[in-house]
Amino acid sequence: MSAPVKKTVKKTPARIHSSMKKETMNPSDYLKYETRFSCEECSHFDSLTDICTIGYVTKHHRKAVQEQQYLLAGKIAFCRFHEID
Image (tube, rainbow, N blue to C red):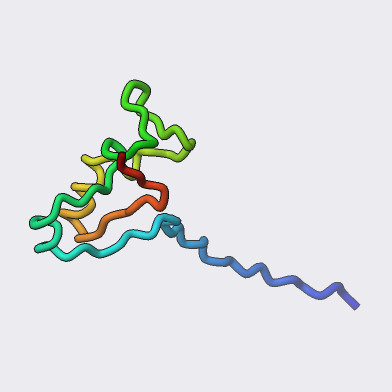
């Protein structure tokens, strides 16, 4: 008797999903109100070193990136720790 042959099954690679939840913002609200949503407007952002003083990565929450994402998809990634003085 010979040993059973194992079949190799190729799995599809896992999809990479963004871990950041982006929220839809109404276009009329976006134009009407001065919503603060970027790192540059936050108390935890150090403008001299361009880093978050809490230690979060700022590249997804910077104003230019946020505005571009809003224009493309109508969504903004709000930071849970955003504070305004």
